[in-house]
Image (cartoon, helix red, strand yellow):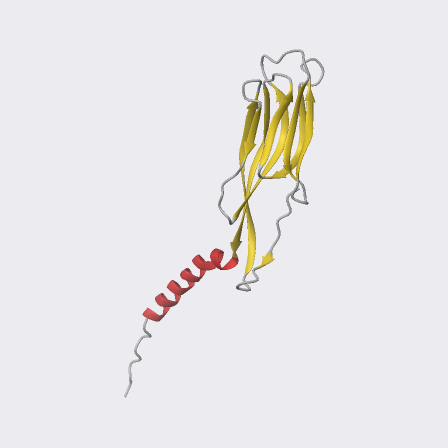
Length: 161
């Protein structure tokens, strides 16, 4: 599971929080389109993850084994390929992977069979958001309130003789 936590920014000494957004992901593999490569955007400040949830045979699948594998980087930076599902229409048409999470780039390949096989899950985008960015609006509101207060002049006292 993706672990996101507060970090200290070494450059500015400002606390940073990780912001995580998730989007639906799906791709269909077949003999015509046997692989899909998930890249994510090239922005430096964003990290892209693919959380695979299900692998399912589609309509028109034949009586054959359909083997799906993923290729991604391991913790040492080496590319590794691993089979994640071996589907057959008569006995195992779908597999639930739970929250199988991989950092981009990830290639999903139909290693054997003709499909169609649908792979679905979530595209996760993690970015660091500095606390100062989050509190800028609050500071502006406080400044406006201060200006409003300073614009009010105290009432003049009547002098009685």
